[in-house]
Image (cartoon, rainbow, N blue to C red; front, side, top):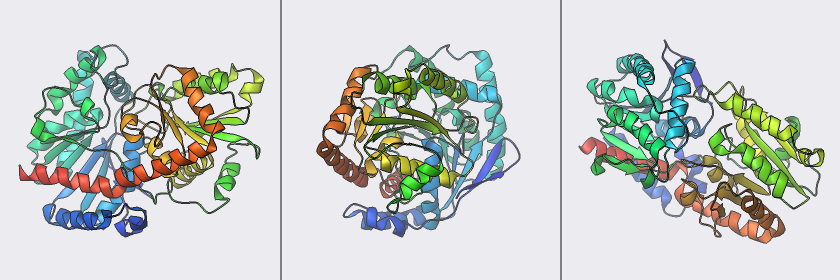
Length: 448
């Protein structure tokens, strides 16, 4: 398990273990293992004498932290010096960067102003100064998402090769998106390389030769994704007082951060108002609030979700459980998420906007049918009608509920979609593909 080691503010180092790629070899697609071995050999030569630093804004909660915690140990076991640093900052900084995050998705106001810029640069200068004291000339620094943008230029001046990795974005340009990029581009345009999740997320003006596309991935043997022995999932859920359903009930699982872009209230009403199957039971779950530093809106969103739940008529309210999952023990938290997904009849992700959605990948890997909105990375993960179901309009609660009812009424369809989804993840979204793709990015970066 990764352990956060406090450093002098404003950075914290996260201690990482080592996991050999051999442990995921049984999970890989045909032909993947030789390709992975070749990438490991190339990486050791390419990065000999260099440290690869990953810097993001939280060690807990969300897909970015999840990937650092579960995927970087494979880099280390492959013989690479990979390290993880986490930014600290005042609450006002994270309130602003959350607003910036929403703007990049096409939501929110107001536009960033002079006081926002002053705060952003103040935290950036302090963080960059401490990072520069750790980074040696020739090292590679991967800066993750908008919170780290002001670190690009100082770390390049310190002699590092800097990659700015942006996981989020919008499918179409709009005034909020333009405002976000107008703010960010002056900070990031000097980066040696840019990595985005989707082509649609790439803003105009970046040099094409420095832009790469790279999909997030999961570790199939992490606590969140590894197989569970028969009966273990139910034991875990009973221990945490989750999903108290009867033998005939069908569990619908919605997992995600308490974020308005994930639309938890929309999920609640789509289920309670429009799902017809009387056997359906919804668990709407996310992390305990107050532990994810870069998500200051979570407590307000969870409060609104609980108010919406209490407003439901009692018979419908009894078919919904809202759960804030404790994060004190990350391994147990991950096992509970694993158990919920494995007990699910249907997994849902009704985002209004989405960078990628690791929860979709996790559900598909467990061979569960997934219903998601046709936004962002969901479009790449799911082939509608073949490896899951996509709902065109995120605001159409009836259509979302109808897709759930369709799967509950046709278990064979659910099995077919789940099996195809698992194979799609095996081919595209496991740790081996992620590593090979990153080594390709770094090869081209260092060649320049």
